[in-house]
Image (cartoon, rainbow, N blue to C red; front, top):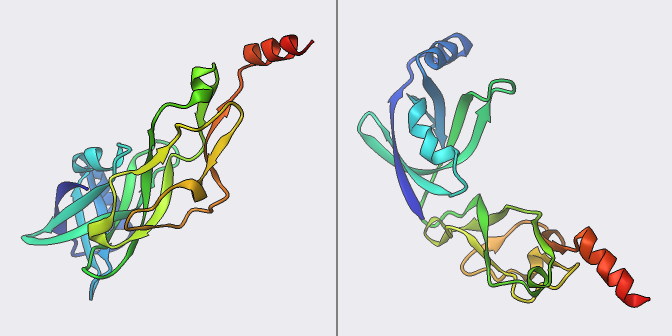
Length: 191
């Protein structure tokens, strides 16, 4: 799993007024929990670009005034109108303790349905996974090499290696849809 470092500074005052002042200085208020005590800190907003605005998942080395914590992003809150980053929650990674995380899906193989003229439609881009920190995958591989026209692949068909998939097994990950032109050809061929 990819790793990133975020350097932060402890927050002395917690509250609405202080958080607003931090955001005006282009800092993001953050909290790190999962350990003995919560760590409230702030970090420059520019450091979150590679972490949040990407489909990849990262393990974050949070450096708060010299103390380094290994963590993952649990939640990020954005402003509803201007999409500004408001707040980030980090979960501390501890050895022997499982964590839940959304992992991106990666398609493997070539679908015969796509070769026949169908369109691959992705229904789920990420799957919720539970695993020990060292077993967390970069992505969940989904084999689509036997996906025919009009068929879909379900979460239950995915092989989990060293982790547990928490997403509903009946949920479709990807579907091969039949385009309108191909439907017309198929209907015309039946006459």
